[in-house]
Length: 101
Image 1 (cartoon, rainbow, N blue to C red):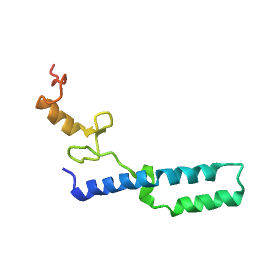
Image 2 (image 1 turned 30 degrees about the vertical axis):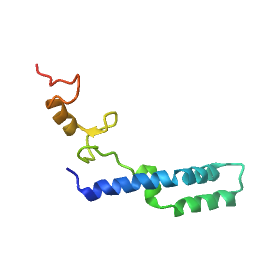
Image 3 (image 1 turned 180 degrees about the horizontal axis):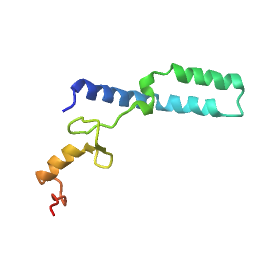
Image 4 (image 1 turned 45 degrees about the vertical axis):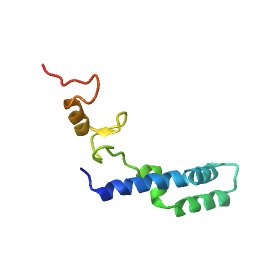
């Protein structure tokens, strides 16, 4: 189980990304618009740099929804390999059986 503080930090980042998404998109579009003057584009980049760091989507890290584990994460299932294996062994995932050969 991951530390609660790490899980909460990730949740906080997620909320911040959602809050600033529209603003960041608008500023990025302004900063890359070739029809605008150089000063306007530079001002847009400065405003973008003033946004909180945690509002950037690249700072998000996927975590297992059951355990909070940050590594070995399956995006499609939103859980780590260890949690998936545990659920499969307990027979809680329909159609998934332990392989043996």
